[in-house]
Length: 205
Image 1 (cartoon, rainbow, N blue to C red):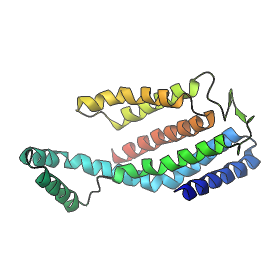
Image 2 (cartoon, rainbow, N blue to C red):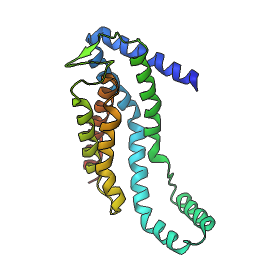
Image 3 (cartoon, one colour):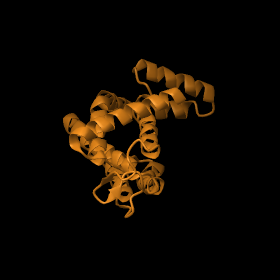
Image 4 (tube, rainbow, N blue to C red):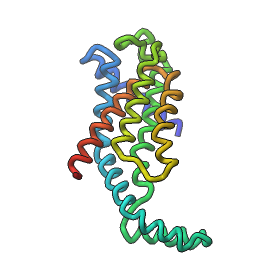
């Protein structure tokens, strides 16, 4: 696992350094590399959207199974898996793009923390290796996260509706101490995700 992490870190260092030679700024390099990653992950994003739509269609059937086998956990699991197999739905399919992004985040964090990017590298008002001094990026990350969930639609479940407000606040709390370069990556990735979601929904309308 450590070997894969180091390999990813070296790969991102190479990408950022190569891009920096052409654009002359590591902040812009992070944005360009983020766009490239999003393009590479687009097939998985489309697959995730399809999986989520299929899961939504199955909700009435899943509710019937839950009610019918409420007192038999084993049979509940068996019937649920049978339903997934019948409709060729993978309940974990929607998690794949998120799981792939986690190693990317850790690798980029390592690049920013291990001196691979010069400590004086700056973009707009911030140094990329330090947290945003004005907390603008964390707030923007929270706002875009809220917009993304709003665009995806709200569930009838009260807990899910609450998460729509809790998650953006959590994003701000988690990210405000992160290096600005990492926050810039996350913000760019989130904005691109919103744009992708908008066009996916428009196409499906």
